[in-house]
Image (cartoon, one colour):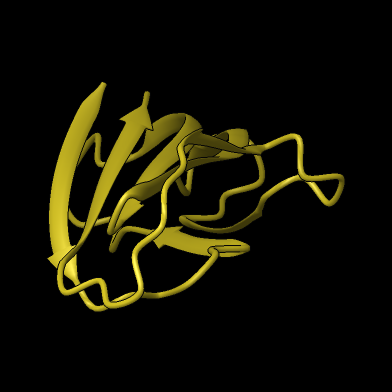
Length: 100
């Protein structure tokens, strides 16, 4: 599992993510189980899960090294784990977890 913390402007509620690699070097392919994005803006925080369960490898699966992942349409992939009120959030934190 790889974890990245990113400080950025607000991207709002994320519905899709695009993940890829350049395929450079031997053994560059990898299997991606899911991407979990934890988004904290002010006092409210959410977690969005983008399931993949596929290879990003030119020699495995369908040979693609790029995937566009979408959260579940019914909202079950998104859950609020903190809720509060904040009118003017100044810093937004994204924690991205790659489960490989």
